[in-house]
Length: 228
Image (cartoon, rainbow, N blue to C red; front, side):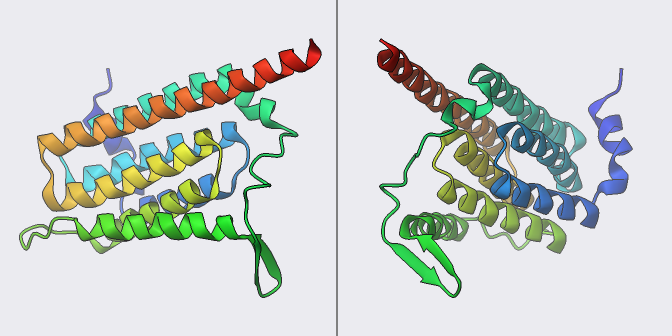
């Protein structure tokens, strides 16, 4: 049976700059992809590569725990996505248009005000969170890992702010948590933080499941009422 140390060792050729580039790409794809199924696949890749980044600064067993939690989170989202037909029930639903606010023009682009306001507020929240990162003179934070952590935080918060639907917004929150976890683990890792971030990832997946299913069943109920 392959141990977690051997598994991460087999992927060691991606550790460092290649892993950073891949996780940044996954965060960008989650932001722009519309299909839930593909977004989830990208999120799973993000967790695997993030496991390599954790192995850069933690013991292989601890990095393995991070990887397993991430993949279990993806399993929860996968079951939810299958149950609701990967968001197909929302096709044709004109969601949030009336609440999008007054259009704002930026050069040739015209965007709803809320599309700018939500990411701005999310980034402010992220900036405040980063202020509470521990400062330790004895901790070494590799520059490439710091870039990965900050980019995951920023793109995760933008995804959370842009997407109205809980399934995609939840992926943004999970990306944010992964980036924040990377920075915290490099600066002040502890078993308490391991438990906290584990609970945060799983709780986020369960909340996304609840909100997505609630919207799905509400939509199905409305369809039944229209037919009757």
